[in-house]
Length: 84
Image (tube, rainbow, N blue to C red):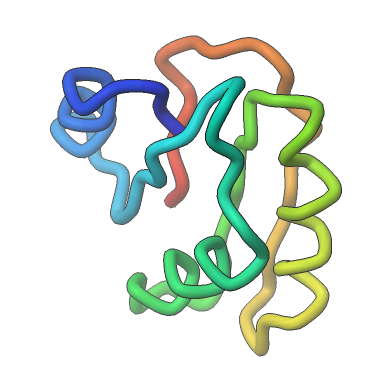
């Protein structure tokens, strides 16, 4: 998750397959996270929510996905905010 287009672009440049825009006032839904998971061809997906309010939603999406999805309980944004 990234809280701005600029940060999203940086994560994509660093190799992320998909980056969801979000932040304190805009938390993605389970379906938005599932859609992001579906956009990658990888079978193993790592989600770094970087927001305590999104961790539960990301875990719900992980349970619904047919892929192996690991949600890391990250709560601070840094340059590792990448969904591989």
